[in-house]
Length: 318
Image 1 (cartoon, one colour):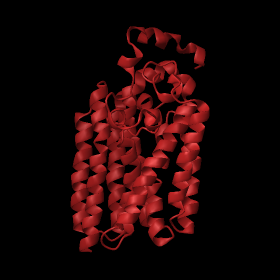
Image 2 (image 1 turned 90 degrees about the vertical axis):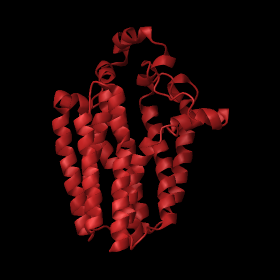
Image 3 (image 1 turned 30 degrees about the vertical axis):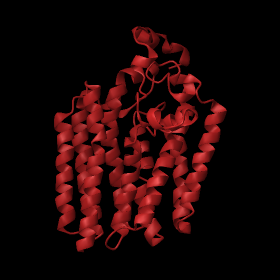
């Protein structure tokens, strides 16, 4: 759909002010604590919405725990945490640069830093360079194999924002991007890959297909009007059936990854609890209620932490 075809959406949104429709959180910690000049940059990196950082971080933490003997190294966990914050911010900046002409004509996104004019395109590019520099500095703390592997992820980071224009499966590309840490965690410890982290990486793809389909149901009406695609639009009323398929593969894949790494019963208990959580998501999901979708999407942080705890306990007792 051409940019000039936004007029129907604009008409639909005419009764709402940008302040009413915006997806920027009011009175977040960014508004309360951050200096005024840096607030637009913090919002651009979505620092006021940490769930994306958690979902990027957790596969890396899973893999670090899987590769460890006993407790995973706290310093490495911290580096991965900082790296997730920085690279999620870089990804959001790339996304908003790519979508700036769309966002400026949609009430929900018009107040984002770039379309609102709080951050210019040039400033956003400089900010992106800063974030990538910090990310590189963190990556260089690891072995050569991990550095090369981490650099490859940039192809996915740059590619993902454009996928929703050409395919109904952008969530698949997001899954390939967001779960790269499952490869990096193991590589940072062992300097190579093995079947367990590779299976975990593929498994993460199905997990992301599930949770981001739920997320995309919040925006499906907007997506139709502005001409972008998603699995929420692809699956429509069959979404729950697809979620069952994705989450069965998620559970089975994590079980196989744990088996390949020699994890014992504590991990299987955690996996059972986590599978119950996924079942709750599907059972209680209302794809026509954006708040319901958002809550179930955010709850995937809890799923990830259950898996992380299960891996650690199993490793300690191994």
